[in-house]
Length: 200
Image (tube, rainbow, N blue to C red; front, side):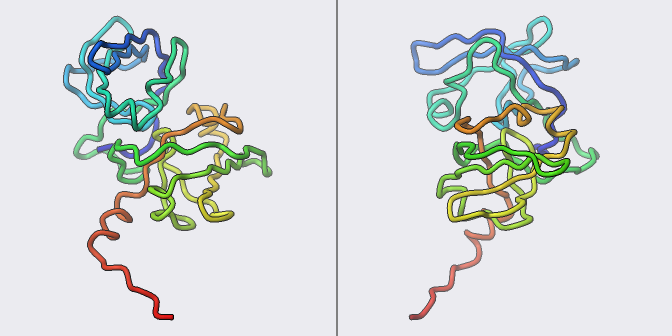
């Protein structure tokens, strides 16, 4: 479990495609004390530390993960948002994030508005149904508030200067793909509360 508060930006150092359809990725990061088997969110994807390397760690992804995420597009030099798993007693500054990507969105616009940076993202149906204004959404592992819903299938988020400087969201441009995770509470409620049918 994570909070969506990025604690480091890592850099992909090496990728290796495996015969079984998976992919090994080595990430350079400044973390200390990583343990084998520890969970780390890489751009919002919960991955397991398979190997410790000097100045970073290695993860092994399976074909299913590659089908649902952008990890198959990672190349040497790709910058990724990182967050170590939440510990009991840690401050809960963001929102509950599982690290289970619900879909890949695409940046439509990115523009300044005063001291904020507004990003409009086209989101798949698997995410759009759980998004509400001022609710939570995770973009590349970053906990953000939904600023607006400009139209069906589109979500707008607002970045403060700190987020632009300390995550990879500040470099997004139209056409870029991003990992999306819908709010956990909204997903559970949709299963527990039957949807009312509107009578015509």
